[in-house]
Image (cartoon, rainbow, N blue to C red; front, side, top):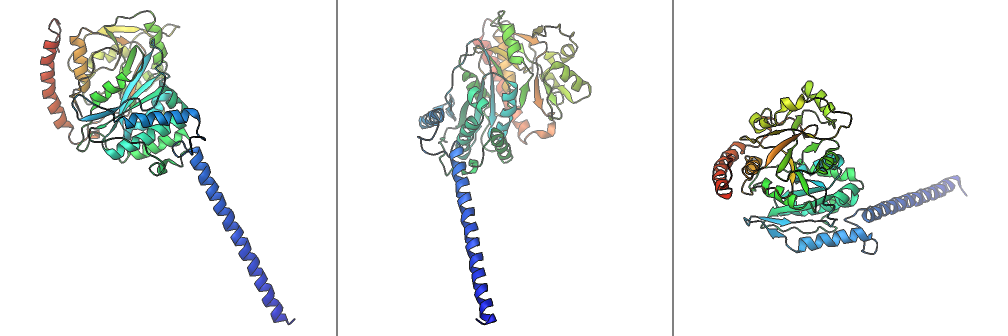
Length: 421
């Protein structure tokens, strides 16, 4: 065979072998991608396969969620909002307990991660969705959190509030595609934080019904006797729940509420858990009283100077009442109270007088305010005037007028009360 022919033959064979090798590599790559997608879909709680392959508890959660959403929820007293209670099924818990209630729009849901880490008991969270698209997203996000975060599934009750014209639906595979790559609890919260950058709280054409949300969350605490209502971006001090339960075990007056002093921290890399840690940061200006720059009178009756300089606790370290104070306008304390304390007035929306009005009614109804000696709440970040939305002052003015009428109504509601606010 001539040399030129042999060379041509070998070239053809070599090219053929290379082509076969490339085809094999392409096949293996496609097979690997397909297997990865199948693994991803089978592992992800929303995109999981048939009911036969789902764990029983997961099927029950999904069936419960679908049933709640199919019911259409209930309208609030104003008829403006639709409420879906207990999106996920869970135990009612113990009666001799204190639960934490909070509220959030989707942009702040990621704060729940730290709240679950700090509060070792039940949490009831009312979520607000300002559009039908957000309501759909809230159901997928809530369900995914519950499946990938055991502590959330075991201890958090979710409730959804949206506009009356919007209905929430359970998102199936196509709608949940953007969640399909999430495999860990941390990844879900990171996704929630990223989504929040596109959602503006207290803005747009939909009023944020903070007092309605607080009432919905309070009603969802199960059989707990006491409740602490906080904003979603606040965290409690370590051991607050267990410390209060020890205190309550001795017996407490049902007309006494227990004030938890609130602070703001500049940087949030490491949040203090004990009063000792808090005091060190307070001394260097990292921590200050809540609303110190925006409305010092709104927290002044807490008497921070006395609280900060209380004598050191004995070796037992047990939570106790430090002192009792009288309500003064415009105080808006955070407190632990019996679950039957007066509800928040749901006419107050957006910014201004929403918590002030409820504390005012507590005073008129004969409640006393006992400040706890070593427990505290911490708001993440210093509150600054420039942080608020453009309509804040207009909303505050409108709610101030509403508050004046509200105080007149309280005189008729509590005709025998000698107190005023």
